[in-house]
Amino acid sequence: MSALEPTLSQGSSGWAVWSEARPRRAIEEKPRSVRGSAGPRRGLDPAEAAPAASPEVVSDRSGGEPPPPPPRPSAWRSAFRLVREGLIILVVAVIISTLIRTFGVEQFRVPTGSMEQTLYGVHTDASGKTLSGDRIFVAKLAHYERGDIIVFEDKLGWLADSGETTSWFKRPLELIGLLPDSSKRYLVKRLIGLPGDHVTCCSASGQLSVNGVELDEPYLYTMPDGSKVNASDYPFDIVVPAGHVFVLGDHRNGSSDSRFHLCAGATQTPELGFPSVDDIEGPVVAIAWPWSRMTTFHTPEVFADVPDPTGDPPETAEISQYPSC
Image 1 (cartoon, rainbow, N blue to C red):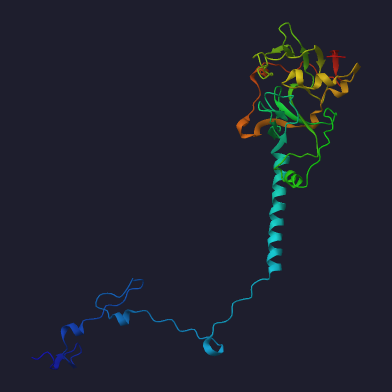
Image 2: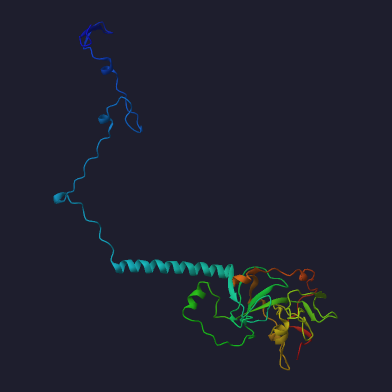
């Protein structure tokens, strides 16, 4: 039989089905496309497998031109938006800085050389160059103990008026906490006596004593010959009043501290020698600047054996021996 001759076959219902003979390859079922296939399957006409073309978008403007772009904002509007965003960033920075300075860490500058060589104020190096004081970090809410370095506001008038004014450029940096606040005056000293502590100097070995325990102070200023300065050049015997502290500088023979302010010349001034606990900002935890002196601070171990006072602190200072009156 010829490949193209018609044939007669018996259908499933008994009726004759007339079909036209075709080549075997021509009657093979076309493979159905599978959704998600990467291209036409084998045996599928590439023209039929090609995806339908997207309908052409015809502009409703004459000549088939695309619509014009939206108008750009004016220069004034762009400048206003930039200024507004800058102000928002500044306000947020001030709020965050205020929260950090109030409840976290604040930066201060060491004003004098009374804490040398632990901390440096404005000083001159070996080459004769004048260097600014160390920048220090103070933990505002941290607990302070005997032996800690503390920062307190100078409400007793220990510092002389320097006459310095803050420039317009530095004031915004102070507000956001990048520079220490120059509107207030602060001092840095080592906390020796808490309320009720009995502090005396000097023992038979020339050492400071707190509540009967002698202190071998490793942080005292070291002289050029390698020896340390005396714990105090003049003796004293005091009991710290309630709500106040007794502080000394590490550079004992160059520090106007609690000892110095107990006397104004020949006049006894005990009310000026004890800073209030309410004026304490917190303990110094680190040097922030300069980088070459960056370090952290902890309570010296020499104070670990000092006991608490046995009785309640007196309302006013008890001074058995004034330092220099």
